[in-house]
Image 1 (cartoon, rainbow, N blue to C red):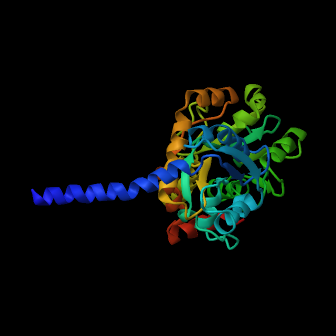
Image 2: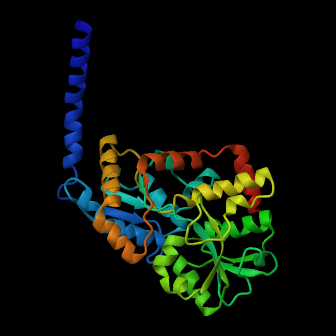
Image 3: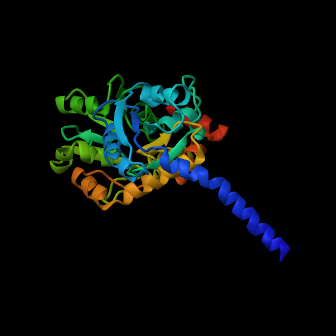
Length: 339
């Protein structure tokens, strides 16, 4: 009996100690403005999803803060990641929408990274939509098999981005003949170059974003989808092969699986390292509520934005696993990049 009373007293004491922390988290955002830093240029997929979330997330955060977007492009979100870890306030008044390739870039050991994504507070992932390789309809390349017989010029932002790396990986592991032209400042610029006939295609663009940004391309069959990259095939792309099913050797399959997992975390949001746990939990639950809000889902449907969310807790695990990629797999991945 005394032992039970002692346990109850201990639990009551813990509840009393935690109550002020929970209350403080609930009150923190009242009357505040929250900056959402988008690690990419205006008009790209990261920007599109970031601005959409900024319109709705505040309504589900206790205190109902106002969110506003600031774009910070540079080095495929490395600039924004370095800012988040080293310069931004770590109190949750600045949140971040970072590029999809960042966990891979850290996992492979890029020198310009001055942060550890595993230490960030991951709030949630809005979409697990597959990434796709696309070819313009006037190109002779209509399927992935065609890309093994005909050269296709692919536009990319930088050599270290997914749009620059993935064509090289497919050339090395699957025998395609992609030719990569780096230097475009955004995905939108790559797409304009396709329309002008400067290049023939684009690699590693999120299918959901493509539908939202270029619905006429999909409607008018202006593009051919060559391959999809992700963990689950998109029902709108029947017959388009999944990348991780195409490896000829176990080592190749492991590399392709890595990229499939990376593609599943397409539209992620996080806070800088050091955010108090109660405040991170509050933001995660606000994100979850936003992703269930009927009005939000209705607007997403009108904009053709894919909403297939992942919780912050699950995302934290996925990102941590990616940035802690085993050394032997890192070696295999780097080997697949060599031209």
